[in-house]
Every structure is written in C-alpha cells, then in structure tokens.
Image 1 (cartoon, one colour):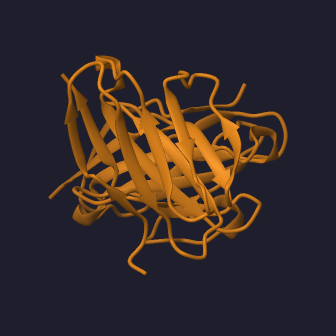
Image 2 (cartoon, chains in turn green, blue):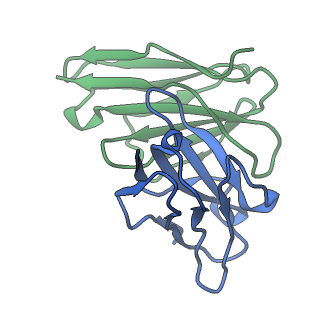
Length: 114
Length: 110
C-alpha cells in the first residue's frame, strides 16, 4: 500500500459542469476525510466518513457538493454546477480508529473552473 | 468556536539559528494539537502531536493550556526544514474534525 491516492490530480472544467473526484484511502483505515484548500489558506474540513457512514458535514458546504463512500473503501466527491469559487485543491485523508488519530493525506486534486 | 491562529505567514531564519513557529488556538475542553508539514512538491504529513511528546527532526512543541498555545520550536534550523507548517486542532468537542491554521512558510537561509 503506497498511501492515500487521489484521481485525477488535475481537473479543468467549465462553469456549470459537474465534476467527480475519487479518493482511495489506506486499506485498513476506516475513516476518510475531505478537505478543500485555497491559496494562502490551510485545509478546510468538508466532510468525513467512518466506514460507509457520513458522520459530519461542514455547515459551509453547499448543497452542490456530495460525497459517498459506498462500501467503506474508496470515496467520491461530486460538485454539481461548478462555480469559479470552487477552484481549489481538494484533499483527501484517511485515519484508523474511532478517536483522534493521525491523518494521512493524499496528493490532492487541483480543480480549476473556467 | 474552535479556531487555530498562526500569526506569521512567512518566517525566515538563518541556518543554525533557533526557530519558533507560533500557534494559538481556541477550544472548550481538552484539545488535541498537531503540527503538519508540507515540503515542496510533497503531500501534507504529520510532524508531531502533543500527546506523544516526541521530538521529531529536532522539533518540539509544548501544549500551554494557560496561554492556549502550541508553538513549534527547533534550536538549530537546517536548510531541509524549509517548508510550509500547519498547526491543527481536533478533539471530542469538534466531532473529531480537524481545524487547520493558515500555515507558516519557513525559509532557512544558508
């Protein structure tokens, strides 16, 4: 296992289009997190899963964003009707256990909305 | 509300000089504090967490609940320490979410 992977690494899309990103966590990790990072900012929490259950979702998260983790393994993050403000790096992280544990981050997917 | 503040966006020190990256937080309850580092062209990785009380790559950080701080320190900076450093907060009161600061870019001048 080489760590958390994310695909695609880069995505350029036109405003109004839908995009979907994938995250494959470390295999034995039951928690999976999604973050968004814009220039000059730290990662901003979006949502997280424990196994297949989505336990928390940021209040700042627009209804255009949805995430799934159907079998408790990989996860997808979909953004519908993209806006220029959605341009950011989308990070995925995974951790094990049910408490506060170290998160292992993926390389991120850079989204550019034109 | 939970918040992490890193007051310095940029910090430059000379090689061999001491370095301190500041982190202040607000949290009601017992926080878990972390420092993450991102080297150029690499992914975010954990540097250290307060409960382990370890020294990683010569860095240490002490949780000061009275001052609500978790500053990162190293007595002698090395060129390879140049990176982006993020302080992060989590805990039961955050629903195990992580809150990150805005980061400090450290440059060690040879």
